[in-house]
Image 1 (cartoon, rainbow, N blue to C red):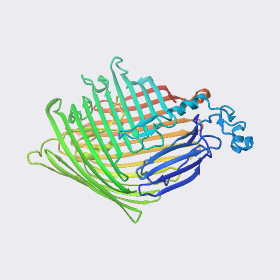
Image 2 (image 1 turned 180 degrees about the vertical axis):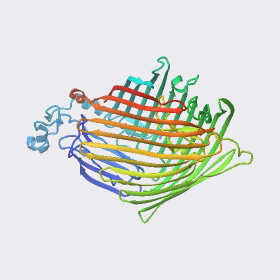
Image 3 (image 1 turned 135 degrees about the vertical axis):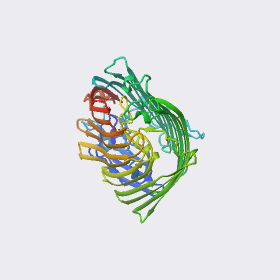
Image 4 (image 1 turned 90 degrees about the horizontal axis):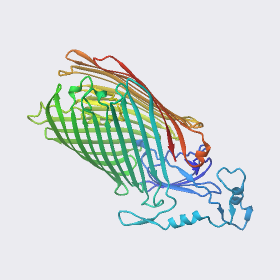
Length: 610
């Protein structure tokens, strides 16, 4: 998108795009921005691109971006802000007859605050910029690069507070985001950083003195588009009565991720995560199946060589250690420790330019078992159209003497972690992308569960652990749909939906488990009024038969979020933007043998960005 210094979109701006892909293929294109200042290059291959935007009579804006493979769903979004004219126009032999000078003096030019002066001396700010251009930034290898241009800082602050609750918890939250421009722009050593944080407080409406709180923190650092580092941390302390336990339930998660290019075609990455919880899972129809306290440390490394788009060789290695208090009923029985080492590899190559074959396997070794999980993926790619199929199967053997040991029940905030406890997994789907950036996809899947698992529907839980229970022997089928679209030049939106069913029967504590569930999210942006609507819905209907007694896990919840940009010209002239925020949540829940209870929550606040 091309914008003016005040943030207004610039239509019909001239763009020069140059790039080079990993296969050393050159890319050159000249285009113009649309009426809303946007431009789209849907057929850009992965590689490094330089973009220059030009508007007659104004300084040019340039940037550089490392574009990833669009087949993975990654989109490189680029903003070029045309700076204000300095007020100085170089005198030419044509004088005022020069077309560039004539445009600068044209009345009604909204991109200029003052009429420029031909041949005027540079203002004092020009000297400051000139002095900054002499600075140098040294990278870890001792190389230096000029610190070019300005040092922009973008920030946003939002605060939201509940003003009406019933049957749930009131939530007050403050969020802040900071990000920088390029330090040393135009060089391979350009740095960018970002900081985001959220701090909130929850209070049970039935017991005002019973409070909880949560915090989120993350920092991102990128160097030249080739190196990225992310450090994140979160802590959630739920109100005690929210889980009907004498001690406060607490969840902690700390994570470090690094990824970087090691050569023209190679990339490497390292991730480490420490997760722990105390008394978090002590409520629910089958709370006795889950550990009172758990702690896990997981570290992994990966290396990938990709000589061409759609072709790669990837190696992965990981180690996981965990400890948990396994209990029988309400009495703690024993402390269980687990250790697991993983090693795997995957390769992908193209056939006839339209067929992509991908296959590999992951093996794991622990003190009590040996396992291997082969997987195969086949894709047919033609332009923006992709059809794919995937299948994996886990083969596990317990060592002698360990066959009867229990597997510690686990919980997760993303369903990708469910793969560790899936005996088999099959999925197929299709995706189509239009040149304008719109896309639609649909996928069907089925998996056989081989462990006790609690899948949290909302990873950003504050006071409610909305979840689905999976038990050994269950089979789960699921259908997912997603679409991004532009209804008109004034309306843009996104829709995601997922629905599934699971069932299983066994001899054990829970004889039968039957569930149906669904999640849906939609977002709509009204561009003329700068209004954003977000709507979410989730539902679960689950019955677990324990000792011939049916226990319920039912949920129905809807949340609506509205953000409205306040039309205050004086604020926009200062380069800032204010938003009014409104949030509403309505729902019903039922657990075990208890009666269904309803809850509602209304919240409002303000957001500021500059």
